[in-house]
Length: 300
Length: 255
Ligand SMILES: Nc1ncnc2c1ncn2[C@@H]1O[C@H](COP(=O)(O)OP(=O)(O)OP(=O)(O)O)[C@@H](O)[C@H]1O
Ligand SMILES: [Mg+2]
Image (cartoon, rainbow over all chains, first blue to last red; front, side, top):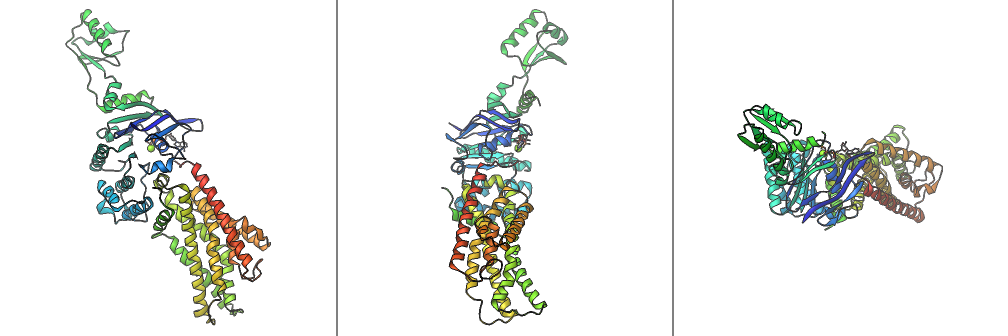
């Protein structure tokens, strides 16, 4: 079952479409990494999922029910979120802020305590939020989102301002929540921040979804370059000239964007033409490379 | 599962802790009453009609501008933290229905306004006794007027709350309050009694004149006059709250 599905989700401001035709599918109990460069429409999309912003076209379904202005307050009881900047009233302490959340949502003490412990804010509750560091404000915001024990958690760049240890803690927290069945959608413009936590990805560029699927599918989507090792790369390159774009790199020839069938034919042709070949391999790719390849495809 | 209005109101009152609004609630009426008394002392006039004169000098001007202005500032103060950081997104991402948010904010502002009237009442009694040595106590009709004032601040609280909810600016809604008070003063001076059913700021100003004999007031506190205040207050408040809710329900959050 998918916790979040959207159909043709679109938002335009004036003539400019900032989110276009998104068909999101976020499976239940996964950590969905929502990636894209600055201004690609991540926050706008998340706001539409929460009905903070009404779509220009398309629809959102959450846990099988439509999410719109008519249904949102009912839906929001089971959705925790943190969008753009962390919330919190500066003139109150962290503890007082949490008590306000507890009171207005009718939560019990234990729920709030668990949320506080999850983000390790126990020792900072008596301090005024105005005097919090950005990282502490983020933690408070996450605690506020967690306190209602949501089935769906939507976090917009939650690791903003966190130190490396804090980022690691949040990753662990997200994985732990997902293992308990909570669906987590988390955005970032830095792949490295969430790639270890996420098992599903949606990659956005200029308001369009470039890729969506599991980690394995992501690797498969961006076909890695083939490297042909040969002592005569120039001769080999000449053989393929006109058919494929190749690049000579030291003792090898790099060919991009060819599948296994084409690779086999290339090798046969090279051998047929008498080029000495002693190795054929696909390049090891990091998730970062895949991400860069995909977003570069989005004309950035 | 939907949070109750009392829980939401409790939350709103909790947000007022350490808020600047309390100093306004206390200082504004104190300053007005003391200014009225000070003028009386300096001009070496007597309180010709005892408690009545003291009440009149304390309340009539206060009701024309400072009270409305004070409510405008209180509304902006109450909404200001909601416009900061991620608070607006958070407020609109809870299961609390928009109507309850709008109502609770209006009631919180009106409650501050009510406390302001109470401070005013106490200040009048204290200066009457200590400064002027007036005999007896403030006539009970002024307690009734105070009670009516508590009701009459509701529509201004609703309008100013709606404005401060809509505009991030602190000053713009306060300026609207000032303009509203100006129009109210002119309309009341022209004895256009019906204006209290149209302009909330006029309703509040009119209520402060009850039993004073100033502007169009007869000087008597009548059942009809009181009922008109209560009815106008109820109608305007409900109307403004309904419109503000509808508007907010359709609006998107800002960037
Ligand atoms: N209310 C609005 N009016 C006009 N344009 C808007 C509005 N809100 C967002 N935009 C535009 O939509 C685009 C996407 O913005 P959005 O905030 O969703 O990007 P993002 O992916 O969250 O970026 P970042 O990584 O910087 O947070 C931007 O070009 C932005 O200028
Ligand atoms: Mg953003």
